[in-house]
Amino acid sequence: MHDMSAPAVHGAPTSFIRKHVFSTDHKVIGKQYYALALVAAFVGMFLSWIMRIHLGWGSFAIPGLHLLSKTGAPGDVLTPEYYLQLMTMHGTIMVFFVLTTAPFAAFGNFFLPIQTGAEDMPFPHFNMMSFWVTFVGFLVLVASFFLGDGPTLGGWTQYAPLSAIGSVGGPGEGLGVVLWATSIAIFCIGQLLGSLNFITTTLDMRCKGMSLMRLPLSTWAWFITSIMGLTAFAVLLPACILLILDNVAGTSFFVASNLVINDQMLPHSGGSTLLWQHLFWFFGHPEVYIAIVPGMGIVSHVLITNMRRPMLSHRVLIYSMGSLAVLSYMVYGHHMFVSGMNPISSLAFSFPTLVITIPSTIVVLIWLGSLYGSRLRINAASLFALGFISMFISGGISGFFLAQPSIDIMLHATYFVVGHFHLVMGVAAMFGIFAGTYFWFPKMVGRMMNETLGKIHFWMSFVGAYCIFMPFHYLGIASNVRRYQAFTDDYLIPLIPVHKFITIAALFTGFAQLIFLYNLIHSRFWGAHAPNDNPWEGTSLEWSTATPPPHNNFGDKMPVVYHDPYQYSVEGASADYIMQASPENVHSPDEEK
Image (cartoon, rainbow, N blue to C red):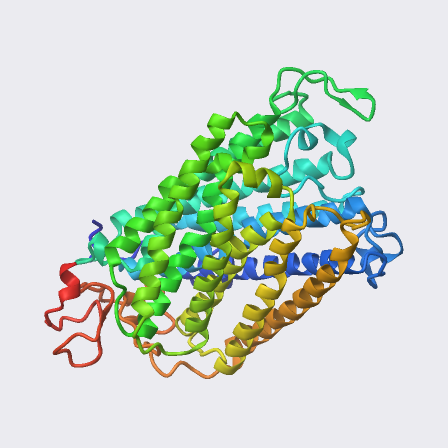
């Protein structure tokens, strides 16, 4: 364990550039990650609006759309190809630059060192590099919008051989794919640098008295996620490099022999189209938990503070999140049930897919059991935490159906799958981000967010999300194929009113996010000052330091930990909570668990 009596890792910056731009302070880097995720989220939401309007009213001309692409939107109406290009960019931006960046890199960078009692990350320059590398990856991805034929249309999964054969595959399948793969490869490097810092901080930088089991659940979630990221992104990075080589160097890693496209025999031989799927989904399913496990930790942390009592079992929650991380590598094959997989292999992947629901169920039952009988403080943060649980349960239930190969084969290419992963991975993770934002905003900037606007934001988002994604399951059961940009078949025409309803719900929910954006910006500059350093009466170390925290987090005196992270309603205590760094000696049965 690190000697916390040592001086700070690096001195406070004096110039504007070193303090706010190329900063090595983990707190500034966390804010930079949050700002990047915020921009990416609204870009992704804007793209989804365009797609939803087109799906509801296919011939409707969206004013100004031709400015985005003259060839992709002639007369301000999307072409089929450009619809797929927008869908690809929406999925890529949201999965990589929002759902991975915000709950893990943004909040984790800001609070993991503080919650462990460290003065900073052990490799601050690596930490700075991780953000700027990620930012460059985002710029490279967005740059593909400015290509003559636009970005790639291969979906966020970029299945081969379409993604590996060059421009003959369609608009954006030449340089667009190269930019996509380059962007994701750069992103992987940034995440690997960040994961190394997170792991080292957790294992080697804890303050005196901070054992592993005294770490808050949010820190455990970031630690577990960093381990997943270190292994998952290490697989996706070389896969992207091989994809680039197939496009620019004439290799055949993912292109089989004798492949004919547009009456052309392609000069490739010896590759495997399924190799890309294996490499991608070995990363892709852990990525689901890279997005959701930080939310689990954040939600647990928020709920405990607002329940004023610890969870039923701190250790079981930790073990369950760890089990999700391990099992996530054993289930990736369920994404490939329709790839011609041997039925025995399908069963081998189906069984752990069902098993992975066990730790998820344990986590949910601990949440619900802990909430039962509690006097929960109702605020924007706790509401979004409850919303997270609701979305996680609703989206997770549909996973039972998709775990069965015989059912998944029928539903795989439909909106049922889209509804499933948007609820369990997308909306749930976003609710975790919102919960963390409303909860930690006072500590990050020293001001309070508007609670009334926060509650309006929650209810509009909660109702809107269900109105959008629950009908997706109905559409999937009705055999509405995903990725279709127009519904001209006889059996699809009766479903168009459902799509119009979903589009209206999407616009309504998007407006709620504009309310959040206004609340965030207004509160940052003109919000009420936080009444004190601990407005929520929390117990973990971030509430023991100044608001906002100083450069080295704790000033001249580093903390010493005396208690577990969640000492609430302890009999004989002077208040209804005991800070981790408080030397108050009160016996608590929770510390013996």
